[in-house]
Length: 329
Image 1 (cartoon, rainbow, N blue to C red):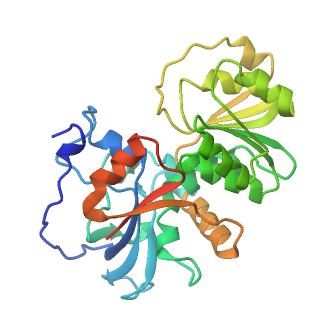
Image 2: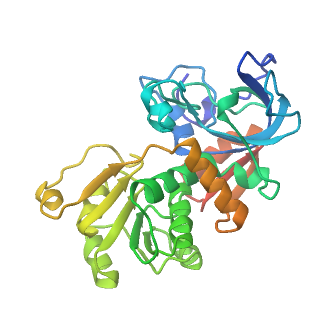
């Protein structure tokens, strides 16, 4: 049943063999996301009981009929269930699949010591990318990459404002933007997080309030890209912070989905409002390459045993984390 933290249970499950087209993965590390918290609440499209988990790294336990995988291979799981045959999938846009579902949200997640996964969701890891760091990448870093690099055309010298800078996606966006040579400004409500954001390369850190656009413009001038991780509370502020022809990337609705907006602010300034839902398999490959090359090092806040997932979610709800919260299986 849906509810608060007390509804979370760790259960024994019957082990099954991999079906045709699947492989069995032995879990090593998982990553907690806001979707896990929403997933234990009573949303109409959720079926209960349900299993958490959109981010998981591990090793191949049973490669099934795969000719490309071997037992013991170190792998990362792509978190979107996609058909592979619709027009979106055939154009390598799996995150826009016409029958798309997110593991851990619309369909049962990856958080089990052994999990059967479609082979097409398996990505082998380079030797120099640890399973721990890899588990931080699929949702937060891939979404930030897809939004900033693919959809917004991130390039050196442009200015980026990140709204919600100290969560997983916000920190990922900061690191990716800096790796591309962009100037970055960000937001947080906690002083200790401001110091860490500056150390990661932010030029300035602002509080979110009605004065935010004015404060951003006074500090840096209007920005080229706003990367919004929060939702209805901040989208209007972000649009007012953009220069003419700027782009706002919206990735979440943590603060809500409904807001009021003066359309003149959009059409008269040629503003682009762009939605980014996670990313493609190619985006995840690109993120892994960036980690392998040393351009990006995932920020890990804390590590919990998998049976303490309630404590991990509580930490996220209280916003006492900076970067990604991991689980060890």
